[in-house]
Every structure is written in C-alpha cells, then in structure tokens.
Length: 386
Ligand SMILES: [Fe+2]
Image (cartoon, rainbow, N blue to C red; front, side, top):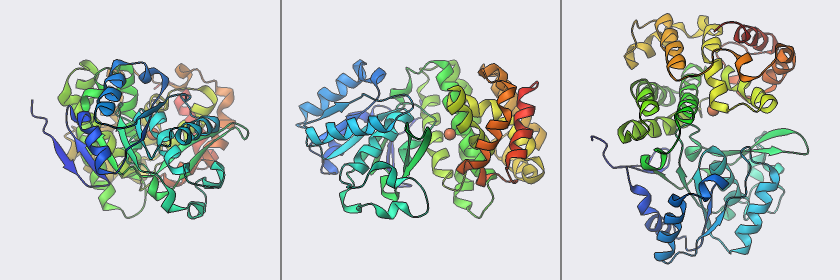
C-alpha cells in the first residue's frame, strides 16, 4: 500500500487518505460548527456508514441533524425542505455527504440558509451571484462518496426548476466548500457500473477542460495529470472495488477534473445535459458514449494537444488516433455502450437535442464552434456504429 495521507490547500482545504472521515468531528470544530446538518441521499442515509458517522459526531458533542429527502436529480422543493430542516435544527453549517446530487444540495442549502431572495434569483447568469449576502453563507464540509462529479470543489449546484422544466445552475464563488475530506474507503462499496460511469465523467471533465480554448495553464496541467491517473487506475478500480490504492487515485482524479473545468467544458457536456433531461440517462455514462464522437468532431482543433496528452499519460502510439483507440478500448472494457441508441434515445430526437445543445452553457467551451449543425453532426455519428 503506497497511499499516503496528505493535506492540500488548493483549490480549497483538502484532507486526503483512507480512514480520514474519522476526522469529521474535529474538522467541524475547526470551522466553528457546533450544529451541522448532514445532507445526503436516501440510499446512503440507510447505510451503517452514515449511522457510524452520526454516532461519532454525537459522541464528540456535535448537535448533528440529517436531511436526506432529495431526488436523484434535485429539484427546488428539495432545497425548500432542506432549508426548513436547517432552520428547525438551528444548524450552523452543512456536511454535504454523497454523490453529486447530495453535494450540490448540501452546498445550496448552506448558501441559501441566510439569503432573503428566492433560489432562482441566484442562477448563474451575468453577475446575479452579487445579489447574495456573502456574510450569511454557512460553511460546508464536503465528503464525496463517488469519484466523478468533483462537486466537492465546485462553486455551484445544479437544481431542477420544475415549473420551468429546466435544470438551473445556482452559483456563488463562496459556495466552494471550506473543507473537503477525500476518503477512498467511502467509495469501495460502489458497484462496477457506477465506478465506470462516474470515472468516465471525471475523464470527460479533464478532456473538455484540457481542450477548451483559452489561456489557463494551471487547469491544463491539472487536467493532464488527472488523465494520467485515470489511465493508470480506472480499470483497476472497476475490476476490484476494494482496491484502495485505485479508489484513492480515482477520487483525487475526480477532484482534479472539476478543479480543471473552471476553464470550461465542451460538446460532451453540451450534449449530455439535454440527453440526460430527455432520456434520464446517467450523466457520466452519457458523456462516455459521446466522448469519441466529440473528440473526432474536434480533431482539427485538438490534434496537437492530444498528441502531447497521449505522450504524457503513457498512451501508445502518442498520437490523436492512439488516444482515440485508448478511449474506445477503455469504453469497451468498462462495459459502456457505443451508441446513443443503446441509451434508449431515438434518432427522431436529434433536431430537438441539437437545438438544446447549442443553448447549453457548456457549448461555449468547445474548441470548434458548437452550434446546432455541429451538435447534429455529432449526434448523427453517435447513432451509428461506434
Ligand atoms: Fe460532468
């Protein structure tokens, strides 16, 4: 076992290492939290791991509460109920514990707990985030239990506005959790198909950030190292979920992917957002299906960059085609479908999806212009043979 413990302060304070969830009560104390609200999802709330954590916090004198009444794709009403629980328990901060949905909801509840305006007034548009009263944002400790979304280092939460039928991004720079605990032991119970889909989401974050136009060498460097980690460890984590070394490396790779995508995302996410909304398909799985098609579409703009990335990550041959072959092989080895038809989509939906992709905020980060015609081209290919 060569997996150390480590403490990092970029992009926020991160404690990495197996078993470090035991430090949660102490971490709450350091942030001045006496009455934290643990926000998680219903499935996790029923597991012994959460019971043990609550007992540990109570034994340390924390008045900890639990809120887990959330949807897999969180909706505005989830936030309303969470805010009521936060107020009823006189909570002073949140422990966001789980996959992307629980992390997003925990962050948004802590953000909204002291605001007077309605939730949708803080959608990520123009400078709407400046409407918030910064002094009233409650602190968050984020504990991911999957290795994919990287929401633990994100400054936003995605919440479905049911009335409008649209997923909205609620954003504020200070929504970034004050402390992250990356404990790979919390991820060993993930089944292989979830390990695969979430790992491919992390890979899509790295690739889209790395290929996005714009000057951001910090993001590029983080994305490249994360691709190397995923290259070296994802198949091992998939094959043996109890391999803590593989789990640990995938957990930090996911955090790095989300750190890098402050630079931008691209066509994979511009397409997977509307596809997920229409078909209900898993976000990471959808990105994984789309990945080779979007890379091929962008080839003229990214060929040189991918050659460098392939060389760095140890992919042979270190060429665009070598990189693409690695993606195709990885996708196959992880049991991921090759076409959108296999996700339950129908070709008749292409025009509608293409228009939605054009309007998605991620489209702006694609290395080639990603209008409806471009999106249609990728979708048509993705309905063919992978
Ligand atoms: Fe993603």
